Image 1 (cartoon, helix red, strand yellow):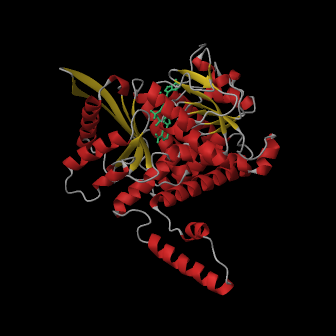
Image 2 (cartoon, helix red, strand yellow; image 1 turned 45 degrees about the vertical axis):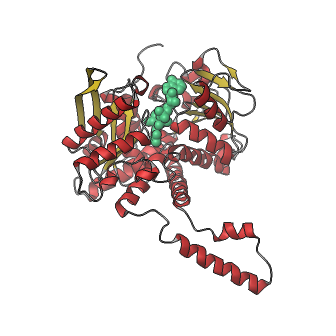
Image 3 (cartoon, protein in one colour; image 1 turned 180 degrees about the horizontal axis):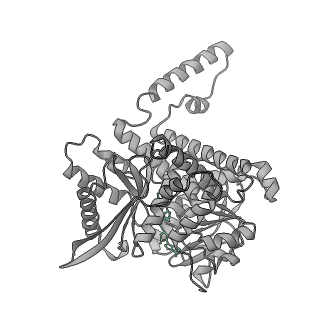
Length: 472
Ligand code: NAD
């Protein structure tokens, strides 16, 4: 690598400043929005084998303009304070863009999950939760964690159980964390939510014929080629849903063990099963392995999806990118330096704070479900089903024609929780895209989608601060 790369936090702050310069908001207000309000750095001992290890961990609450604050917990050996601050800042903007009424937060535990047994990870997670409880950094009305890189429903269940042990009489305790298993106060559709949201974001981008014409891109997703870096939660659902519902061809996948390519279409569902069996994506039938794993950036495709970690496209490799569209499924995968190079080349970057907001959107639905103590659809599903059946019966008697069993089951179906979650997520992603697009059109000075997304967030967060009377 060449000279110093912009750090993740620097990139977020530089992008903020670029957008802030285009607003008329008071300087003090902008400084308040930009700053991280509370940074809790902790060290705690956990018994691993017959020794004690001192674990380094963080929880950052970036903005309290709305309560609770919200953001995932990352388990990774690369965790550091600046990274968590960058991720917490992004959460504030992300929530504002998709109209989810939370402030931004993020947590990080500096451990590599591969290096510990499930029992050890459970001890670490529970001890981290206790630290959060002790400092009032968790609670349904205070700060609500969720999964992120290296964590999933299992860790969220441990967090819930620990929180409930310390707060046995709190009626809304289940809302202290989201991304929980469905049978432990979770919500159907949360696990796939971020990837599904990425799919909606990409689909929306390609759906505007007039915009595509200007860019010289064929509208529509069908047949477009995609390369994915990182086949974890976000990357795998982005791939499967884009293939199944968008007709996208995935022609490259990059993971820790290497990068595979295909001339046709890599079936992501089959690849996931293969990886589970063999422990690697390499050797998957119908694919070739690239000599250098890092060459995933060079693959010629329509949509490049970095879905692993931040700073994957940086100033030294951005020039090799051949894709026209980069969908930021991960947080911060493109550094500010790389972005300048990519924009110059005519690339379009669908920014993280919009592109991967599906996770927090469905987390919001889960939190609402926990506070209402009722599954979505429970009250109205049967009622809708019965009244639609009556209507279909009436149509049959009036027209003398028979409606097929299949049509009946489709038309009369009452919405289940997962149907409502998907529909709410789709609505959110479609509306947010329209809002970002409208800002790009209204403000001539806005040249890229990230700046437009930032402006959408800044307008809303600033408005909240003014409503609070903090900046009259
Ligand atoms: P995950 O742990 O489920 O998966 C990440 C995958 O990336 C793993 O399979 C890992 O092996 C792979 N990976 C790591 N480094 C790599 C490299 N250099 N090259 C190729 N592959 C690599 O994590 P996730 O939850 O899917 O999160 C991925 C990204 O999406 C993160 O940036 C996270 O902050 C962001 N994100 C996640 C969610 C969520 O709901 N989980 C929501 C919003 C944003």
